[in-house]
Image (cartoon, rainbow over all chains, first blue to last red; front, side, top):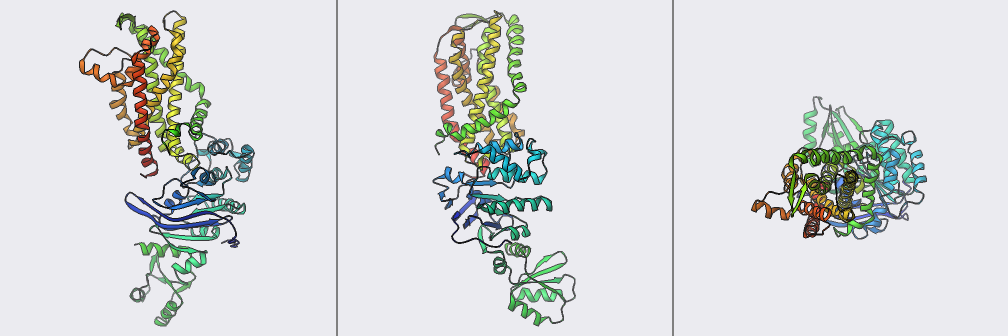
Length: 311
Length: 269
């Protein structure tokens, strides 16, 4: 998690209100609001099908919302689409670079898709190639790069025209730990430049490390929002009890929890049971001789809790 | 966004420029087929088969087959090259390379991508037709072919318009075909019937139904119009009909292409 140095005075660069979208007859996004300020990283979390990518796709103009308004750097995406799109950059979930061009050619070509043209485009591209560690591969086709460098190229493409808001859709999925850390550093750098960064991820450590604020989506709605610690408290509670699956008293304990409306989640050889402070006190009193582990909740617990609610 | 005004937007030109840049990088390999194909066709069919055929009666003129074939080949090149680009090449860019998705995350919108593809298909097809003109000129220099060369510049914009219309047909199939395995269907059901019933390579037989039906075939009108233009130096109603039919195709199909491709690319209405 970062130092949370975002000020309310920092300009809001992304403001989306009341977003609604149905696809194939299903309401995928159902009244989502998003804001992101200059120099802020907003993490969008949620299980598969929660509406993260659809929300992102509406925000960068790929999909038209059925209802709601999106403003990018003050420009209404619906009414002033060209200016709004000029102010945003996108790194899609799939690698959508142009396979017919080299790494450098990709950046040059992407720069041609924006007006007004980026001043000193070629110098900016040289600087990006250096900064993103792409110099050894500048004249190679992207398909020759490793997964990590392909993602670097995707992020470099997203910022070649100096946008003010950048959307990163699962930027590190499929990368090894070293490559993930390298991408994290790039994202930190974008925030330091004052960009508003909106990212989706399935990696809980990534969301916790990178995001100033989290917005947890579930079934197309915002389930919880705030700084990572507060979001965990809202959804999961203050504590998580880990109870061995094979313990002699386990069936009785699980039955006790279910009777009290608590929903334990089974993960490999343990039950994970989210509890607030009074709940933990009641549990301790009810089973004084039981062996178990108590720890603070993590974002993994959040995902488990959401998945459990959905099923 | 108006589906027609997007044709002249800078974004459409940016897409056209992208295709041009990629194509010109391999100019030596991509130029060979459009030069060799008409050369081989004119030698094999125009000269070789033409000797077996003797002369043909066309509009009161007695022609050898090479002279009949030459204008038809120009029309067929515009038709075939444009269709191929807007069907196969565009499908590959859309579906496999995902380069459309990359473009659509910028200031480029789907309307621009569609026009960029259509303009590119038409530009390439027209360039190939110009190469056919060069080959024809070679036959002219060898005293094997006599055409009204002065009318050739008039033919070029018409070929471009026709190629643009045919590209709209190709993009329609790009939008609706479920997979690349289905590409043979438009070839058998659309390309071959249009190509054969078009007076490009041989005269249409005098069958009442067929004679009426081919009047609605823009390729037939184009081939017959170019033949009159280049063999007799006459601007006939065929050229006007070709331009009209191509214009109608564009007006009708471009908005439909955009609607279908929007659904295909975005999964949206």
